[in-house]
Each structure stands twice: as structure tokens, then as C-alpha cells.
Length: 203
Image 1 (tube, one colour):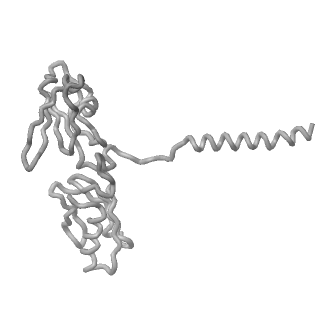
Image 2: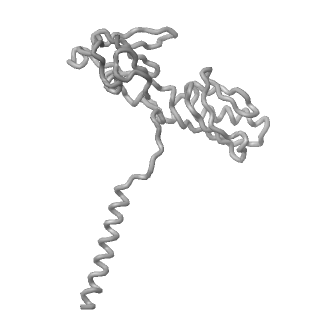
Image 3: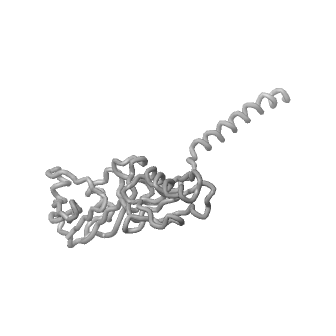
């Protein structure tokens, strides 16, 4: 009887360990994400250009008084101690870190600067008019007008789906791009891939 028990104990331990490993592998580590927290579209994180309303984390090694989270203002600049206003929009995180480092060399010996984009708010599209849930949304990778419209909860009973148009800023002025919903869903017209700042208007 004791011999049989001794043979069973390793088997039970092995089974318990295997089950624990299976449970551990099935649980993903917690991820802290917010809507719009990643660069979207065909832009890789390294190539992403900072835009207005993005939130940045500026870390200067051994300089807690300078390190902080800052929003990019509508004029494209951020405010930092010692440097005052720093241009951020239009730059990558690496380029901005270099500019900050160069500026701080007047006050700090060999500053080490890291810039992290914690929230992407500049890459958004908007849906207005006769939709159930109008408003702004994060521009997801390769998002099209159809996908955005479905995220808006569909149309109201008064929507003129043949007369939808997309407002897009081109060369400093807004241009209307017609979007016939019925033709698109039937395959008669191509869907439209959205760009940051596009406004879908459903009359």
C-alpha cells in the first residue's frame, strides 16, 4: 500500500504542476492601454510624428524637477523648465529628445533625455450628423469610412446615406469627398481609407 502511495505522489505533483503551467500560460500579463494610446495607420512607433493634444512623458535622468508629463499645445509646443517653449509637433520622439538635450546642455552637464508618447490624441477622425453616436474616435490602423460609420452606431431614420461626404484638409483648405454609402456596400464604389482629422458628415 505504501509503495503504491509513493508511486502516486510524483504523478499527482506532476499533474498539479502541469495544470498550474497551463493556467499561467493562458493568463496574459496586464496591459495598460487607453483609446488612441498607439500610433495608428501605416506609421511605425519610431516614425510617428507628434501632434497637438498628444501627451508626452519627458524624463531627464537625475533631474526630477524637469521630468514630467506634458500635453502638446494647439500651437504644437510644450512647456519645460529652463527651456520654456519647445516645438514638439512634427517631430518624432527621438528628434524631440535630441532637441531637449541640446537645449539643456547650457544648464546641465551631459543631460540624458527620454521622450515617451503616452497618449495619441492627434490622430482622430470625427463623425457628425445623422448618426446614433456622433463624435470623435481614435483613428485605428487602416480604418475606412465604413468602419468608422459602424463605430458610430449606424444611421438615424433621417440620414441621407447617398449624400454622405468626407471633409478633409488639403493644402490648408477643406475639401469634400463624396461617399455614397449604398454604392460602397454594394461594391459599386470603393471604400475610403481615412486620414487624421477627417470628418464624416451624414446629412
